[in-house]
Image 1 (tube, rainbow, N blue to C red):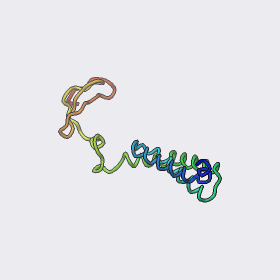
Image 2: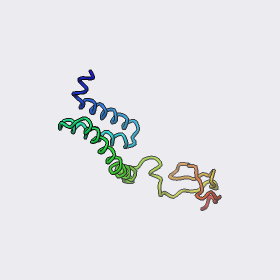
Image 3: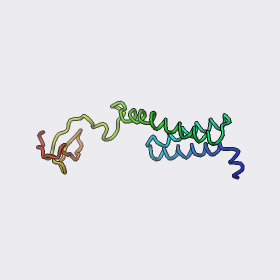
Image 4: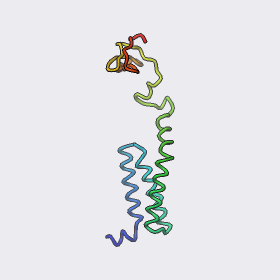
Length: 131
């Protein structure tokens, strides 16, 4: 088995990619898919005839570059989608709220779009419900 694996590193790279893809589907952090991109680059290096040490270097370099440059851009696009495609609390950013109870650093109530929400005062000072 180890002899076969030593001659067929592509199987290890492909298995690692599939594992990273499954972990990414569970976490949705856009981190493990970047490592998956590194494994695909190492897989291509293996098919091109590169030695194992070079495949590992390709994996590390491509993964780090993707984490450093592609992940931040992807996260910003993911978080700043069109307003009609935002979900949950992201839809409420920038909406006006009706204060129902005085807000302090620890407690308060507000109504946004017909739903009640906890409200907190910025800076920790108490504010009236009319502010």
